[in-house]
Length: 212
Image 1 (cartoon, one colour):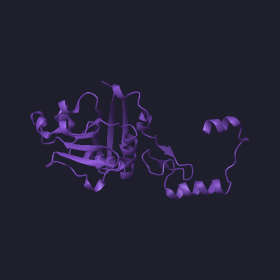
Image 2 (cartoon, one colour; image 1 turned 180 degrees about the vertical axis):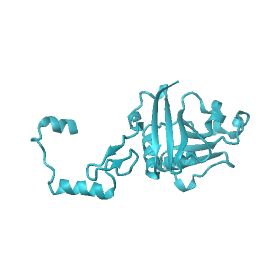
Image 3 (cartoon, helix red, strand yellow; image 1 turned 60 degrees about the vertical axis):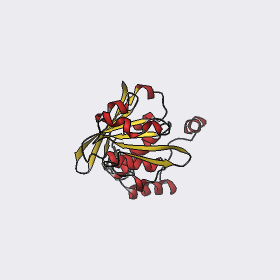
Image 4 (cartoon, helix red, strand yellow; image 1 turned 180 degrees about the horizontal axis):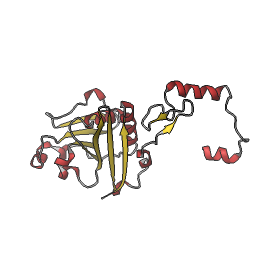
Protein backbone atom coordinates (compact mmCIF):
# COMPACT_ATOMS: atom_id res chain seq x y z
CA UNK A 1 0.00 0.00 0.00
CA UNK A 2 1.35 3.43 -0.93
CA UNK A 3 2.18 5.82 1.89
CA UNK A 4 3.68 8.73 -0.05
CA UNK A 5 2.33 10.59 -3.05
CA UNK A 6 3.85 13.37 -5.10
CA UNK A 7 2.52 15.45 -8.00
CA UNK A 8 4.67 17.10 -10.63
CA UNK A 9 3.53 19.36 -13.48
CA UNK A 10 5.75 18.91 -16.54
CA UNK A 11 5.63 22.04 -18.69
CA UNK A 12 8.69 21.34 -20.82
CA UNK A 13 11.24 18.68 -21.83
CA UNK A 14 13.45 20.13 -19.10
CA UNK A 15 10.74 19.30 -16.57
CA UNK A 16 10.56 15.70 -17.80
CA UNK A 17 14.34 15.43 -17.61
CA UNK A 18 14.39 16.79 -14.07
CA UNK A 19 11.77 14.25 -13.01
CA UNK A 20 13.79 11.46 -14.65
CA UNK A 21 16.89 12.54 -12.73
CA UNK A 22 14.97 12.65 -9.45
CA UNK A 23 13.53 9.19 -10.13
CA UNK A 24 16.95 7.81 -10.99
CA UNK A 25 18.15 8.89 -7.56
CA UNK A 26 15.52 6.68 -5.96
CA UNK A 27 15.54 3.58 -8.18
CA UNK A 28 17.46 0.46 -7.13
CA UNK A 29 18.36 -2.78 -8.98
CA UNK A 30 15.33 -5.06 -9.25
CA UNK A 31 12.74 -2.25 -9.07
CA UNK A 32 9.62 -2.13 -11.18
CA UNK A 33 7.97 1.09 -12.27
CA UNK A 34 4.33 1.11 -13.40
CA UNK A 35 3.52 3.79 -15.99
CA UNK A 36 -0.13 4.48 -16.68
CA UNK A 37 -2.03 7.11 -18.59
CA UNK A 38 -3.85 7.68 -21.88
CA UNK A 39 -2.27 7.53 -25.30
CA UNK A 40 0.10 10.43 -25.80
CA UNK A 41 0.41 11.23 -22.10
CA UNK A 42 4.19 10.96 -22.25
CA UNK A 43 4.94 7.47 -20.92
CA UNK A 44 7.52 6.63 -23.58
CA UNK A 45 9.01 10.12 -23.36
CA UNK A 46 9.63 9.63 -19.64
CA UNK A 47 11.15 6.20 -20.32
CA UNK A 48 13.48 7.77 -22.88
CA UNK A 49 14.68 10.38 -20.41
CA UNK A 50 15.11 7.77 -17.67
CA UNK A 51 17.10 5.60 -20.04
CA UNK A 52 19.41 8.51 -20.77
CA UNK A 53 19.94 9.33 -17.10
CA UNK A 54 20.60 5.65 -16.36
CA UNK A 55 23.31 5.64 -19.05
CA UNK A 56 21.47 3.75 -21.77
CA UNK A 57 21.52 4.77 -25.42
CA UNK A 58 18.54 7.13 -25.54
CA UNK A 59 18.31 6.74 -29.33
CA UNK A 60 17.31 3.10 -28.95
CA UNK A 61 14.24 3.88 -26.85
CA UNK A 62 10.94 3.85 -28.70
CA UNK A 63 7.45 2.70 -27.89
CA UNK A 64 7.70 -1.12 -27.97
CA UNK A 65 4.09 -1.66 -29.04
CA UNK A 66 5.01 -4.30 -31.61
CA UNK A 67 8.11 -5.62 -29.83
CA UNK A 68 6.66 -6.02 -26.35
CA UNK A 69 9.94 -6.13 -24.45
CA UNK A 70 13.14 -4.15 -25.02
CA UNK A 71 16.27 -4.56 -22.94
CA UNK A 72 18.79 -1.71 -22.82
CA UNK A 73 22.27 -2.49 -21.58
CA UNK A 74 24.02 -0.23 -19.10
CA UNK A 75 27.76 0.03 -18.47
CA UNK A 76 28.75 -1.77 -15.26
CA UNK A 77 25.11 -2.02 -14.10
CA UNK A 78 22.10 -4.33 -14.54
CA UNK A 79 20.03 -3.59 -17.66
CA UNK A 80 16.94 -1.47 -18.06
CA UNK A 81 13.90 -3.39 -19.35
CA UNK A 82 11.05 -1.60 -21.13
CA UNK A 83 7.70 -3.39 -21.48
CA UNK A 84 4.59 -2.17 -23.31
CA UNK A 85 1.45 -3.94 -22.09
CA UNK A 86 -0.95 -2.04 -24.37
CA UNK A 87 -1.74 -5.13 -26.45
CA UNK A 88 -1.00 -7.65 -23.74
CA UNK A 89 -3.14 -9.61 -21.30
CA UNK A 90 -2.06 -11.59 -18.28
CA UNK A 91 -2.19 -14.88 -20.21
CA UNK A 92 0.79 -13.68 -22.26
CA UNK A 93 3.08 -12.89 -19.33
CA UNK A 94 4.60 -16.38 -19.24
CA UNK A 95 5.57 -16.11 -22.91
CA UNK A 96 7.69 -12.98 -22.44
CA UNK A 97 10.65 -14.83 -21.00
CA UNK A 98 10.97 -12.42 -18.07
CA UNK A 99 12.32 -15.21 -15.86
CA UNK A 100 15.49 -15.13 -17.93
CA UNK A 101 16.13 -11.44 -17.26
CA UNK A 102 18.86 -10.28 -14.95
CA UNK A 103 17.39 -10.23 -11.42
CA UNK A 104 18.82 -6.77 -10.91
CA UNK A 105 17.13 -5.26 -13.98
CA UNK A 106 15.04 -2.14 -13.49
CA UNK A 107 11.75 -2.82 -15.27
CA UNK A 108 9.57 -0.02 -16.68
CA UNK A 109 6.05 -1.13 -17.64
CA UNK A 110 3.82 1.03 -19.84
CA UNK A 111 0.04 0.45 -19.64
CA UNK A 112 0.76 -1.28 -16.35
CA UNK A 113 -2.92 -1.42 -15.30
CA UNK A 114 -3.44 -4.14 -17.88
CA UNK A 115 -1.00 -6.52 -16.19
CA UNK A 116 -1.20 -6.07 -12.38
CA UNK A 117 0.28 -9.53 -11.87
CA UNK A 118 3.43 -8.44 -13.70
CA UNK A 119 3.66 -5.15 -11.82
CA UNK A 120 3.37 -6.49 -8.28
CA UNK A 121 2.68 -4.62 -5.05
CA UNK A 122 6.12 -3.07 -4.58
CA UNK A 123 6.23 -1.09 -7.82
CA UNK A 124 6.51 2.67 -8.03
CA UNK A 125 3.41 3.96 -9.84
CA UNK A 126 3.48 7.01 -12.10
CA UNK A 127 0.16 8.12 -13.58
CA UNK A 128 0.49 10.69 -16.37
CA UNK A 129 -2.34 12.90 -17.57
CA UNK A 130 -2.80 15.71 -20.07
CA UNK A 131 -3.00 19.24 -18.71
CA UNK A 132 -2.92 21.02 -22.06
CA UNK A 133 -1.13 20.64 -25.38
CA UNK A 134 2.29 21.30 -23.91
CA UNK A 135 1.92 20.15 -20.31
CA UNK A 136 1.45 16.92 -18.42
CA UNK A 137 0.80 16.11 -14.77
CA UNK A 138 2.58 13.19 -13.11
CA UNK A 139 1.05 11.58 -10.01
CA UNK A 140 3.70 9.48 -8.26
CA UNK A 141 2.78 6.87 -5.66
CA UNK A 142 5.60 5.33 -3.66
CA UNK A 143 5.12 1.86 -2.13
CA UNK A 144 5.50 1.56 1.63
CA UNK A 145 8.52 -0.71 1.20
CA UNK A 146 10.45 2.22 -0.31
CA UNK A 147 9.77 4.78 2.41
CA UNK A 148 13.25 4.54 3.98
CA UNK A 149 15.07 5.24 0.72
CA UNK A 150 17.22 8.28 0.35
CA UNK A 151 16.25 10.66 -2.40
CA UNK A 152 12.48 10.47 -1.98
CA UNK A 153 12.14 14.14 -0.90
CA UNK A 154 13.48 15.13 -4.33
CA UNK A 155 10.28 13.78 -5.87
CA UNK A 156 8.39 16.69 -4.30
CA UNK A 157 7.85 19.30 -7.00
CA UNK A 158 9.89 22.49 -6.58
CA UNK A 159 7.38 25.25 -5.79
CA UNK A 160 6.65 28.05 -8.19
CA UNK A 161 8.48 31.16 -7.10
CA UNK A 162 9.21 34.76 -8.08
CA UNK A 163 12.46 35.48 -9.88
CA UNK A 164 14.59 37.76 -7.65
CA UNK A 165 15.90 39.58 -10.72
CA UNK A 166 12.86 40.08 -12.97
CA UNK A 167 10.03 39.75 -10.46
CA UNK A 168 8.29 37.30 -12.80
CA UNK A 169 6.73 33.98 -11.82
CA UNK A 170 8.94 30.91 -12.34
CA UNK A 171 7.36 27.46 -12.51
CA UNK A 172 8.88 24.66 -10.50
CA UNK A 173 10.03 22.69 -13.54
CA UNK A 174 11.89 25.59 -15.14
CA UNK A 175 15.50 24.62 -15.95
CA UNK A 176 16.65 28.02 -14.66
CA UNK A 177 14.62 27.94 -11.38
CA UNK A 178 14.51 30.12 -9.32
CA UNK A 179 15.40 32.55 -12.12
CA UNK A 180 13.06 33.46 -14.95
CA UNK A 181 15.60 32.69 -17.66
CA UNK A 182 19.31 32.30 -18.30
CA UNK A 183 19.79 36.05 -18.60
CA UNK A 184 18.35 36.56 -15.11
CA UNK A 185 20.58 33.81 -13.72
CA UNK A 186 23.66 35.44 -15.23
CA UNK A 187 22.58 38.83 -13.91
CA UNK A 188 22.38 37.38 -10.40
CA UNK A 189 25.82 35.82 -10.81
CA UNK A 190 27.17 39.16 -12.00
CA UNK A 191 25.89 40.85 -8.85
CA UNK A 192 27.76 38.38 -6.69
CA UNK A 193 30.96 38.72 -8.71
CA UNK A 194 30.78 42.51 -8.61
CA UNK A 195 30.05 42.39 -4.87
CA UNK A 196 26.78 44.27 -5.38
CA UNK A 197 25.20 42.00 -2.77
CA UNK A 198 26.04 42.79 0.83
CA UNK A 199 26.08 40.40 3.76
CA UNK A 200 24.12 41.84 6.67
CA UNK A 201 26.50 40.42 9.31
CA UNK A 202 29.90 38.77 9.49
CA UNK A 203 30.07 35.06 8.68
CA UNK A 204 30.55 33.00 11.84
CA UNK A 205 31.46 29.36 12.49
CA UNK A 206 27.82 28.26 12.66
CA UNK A 207 27.27 29.49 9.08
CA UNK A 208 30.23 27.44 7.91
CA UNK A 209 29.01 24.31 9.70
CA UNK A 210 25.50 24.65 8.23
CA UNK A 211 26.91 24.92 4.70
CA UNK A 212 28.94 21.68 5.04
